[in-house]
Length: 184
Image 1: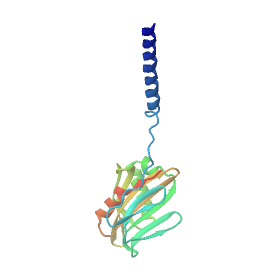
Image 2: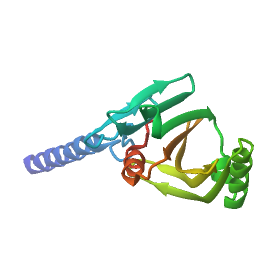
Image 3: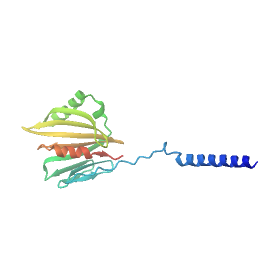
Image 4: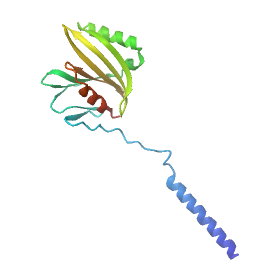
């Protein structure tokens, strides 16, 4: 009888340990919580812009001017600049074919008296997000400038971050692209 009691007690203790261990681990596989993205660390000489939806880094000696739906960052009002425009959710950038999107861009730019060349759309990714990237050259009155646009949709808004290069600056484009983060 004593042996039966000891066996029963050992079995109860073993089952109790199994249940305790199982309850300690319950839910860990099912409920892996992910932290929301955080703004990227700005490279040396850059600071981070963060509006709660998106963030990116820009040169620290540039001036920031915000409007209700726009942001302009530049140095002394001339040369290279970065603009952000947001609009209601617009899926045309991702859904239109390359040729359809190029035609839309050419039509809107020619309406402003300019021309567009070297158009390219890339669906790409940085360390943080999937991004639609447009690159092209705009010409008007004998002057040309390269534009690179990074496009991301956040909720019901589509953000278009445009880097305009009147003087080639691939480092600027790379730093903006590599720090562009959708925060929601």
